[in-house]
Every structure is written in structure tokens, then in C-alpha cells.
Length: 188
Image 1 (cartoon, rainbow, N blue to C red):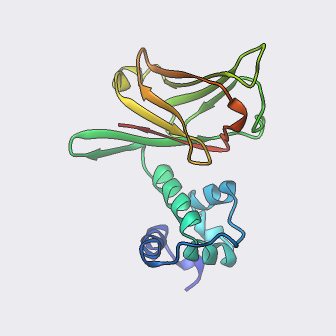
Image 2: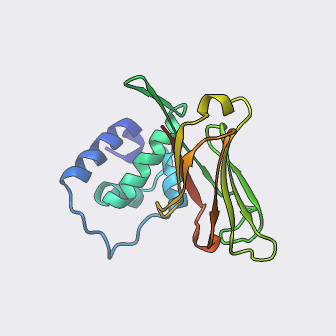
């Protein structure tokens, strides 16, 4: 069976099983880049995957976990009904025009189109600034008072709080360590 003959669902199930039963150490192996994992998680991503990429996903719990996360984000409409609690799972990606570590204001839309993540450096001290998550006008009322967590590409929590006035914001002392190459947001 080749990569083109495996459905994304079948691969997700196989990789989830491997994650539970497989080895946990992959430190000395070259991992897939976050950008490539994101591409492979997209529509027809596995159809264009190279054999070594499929093989790596099948033996690397770290890359598989990231790939499975992005498959779930990209194949859902961003909403999951569970026990009468509406949870929103989405994310975003730093576009080519913006570069990681840049000390200019960034406004990044989420994949679901309901949020904008902002990174706003101070003019006098660009390493410090504010991180914001804003619900788009049509969605702002839906999320009011609900808690949200935003993580960067390194899985570090960069923003956590409750929506007030359609926004969550916090001051950050060191914006330079935040990697927005890929980011995720979960609203509970």
C-alpha cells in the first residue's frame, strides 16, 4: 500500500495507535519541519507526501502528534460539540511577508476566520509589547467571557485569559522568543 492509497483517517488511526505503543525517543532523527507537517495535514497532503515523510510520521510520535493536531484543525469547521460545551479549535500561520522575530506589529488571522492574533511591540522597546487575541466582529458576542489559550509553534502558552469586549490581551516582556510560524487557539 502506498501513501496515495492510505486515507488521512486511516493514517491518523494508525499513527495514534503507534503513539500509544511506539518508542518515545526520536532525538537523533531529522524531524519534518513544522511547515511541512502543516502542508501534509492539508487537503490531499498525504497524496503528495514522499515515502520518507510517511515513514517518518509512522515512527515519530512528536511529528505525528503535531500532524494529527493540524489534521483535526484543518478538517473541522473549528467547532466541536461535547457535553453541551462548544469548544473552538483553530490556529494560524505566519505568512511569508512577516518574518519570525520581526519587531513590527503583526495581525494574523486564524484558519477558521473568527480570530485575529496580534503582536504589538512597543516603539521605544520593541522586544516588549502586547499580545492580543481578538474575536472578529460577528463572533465577538459568542465568545464573551469564555476562556482561551493561544500556543506558539514551540507549544508554549503565549496568551491565556477570558474574552472581555471581544478581546484578550497581555503584556509580554520578551516578544523575540515567540514563534508564530504556526500557532493554535483553543476557546472553551
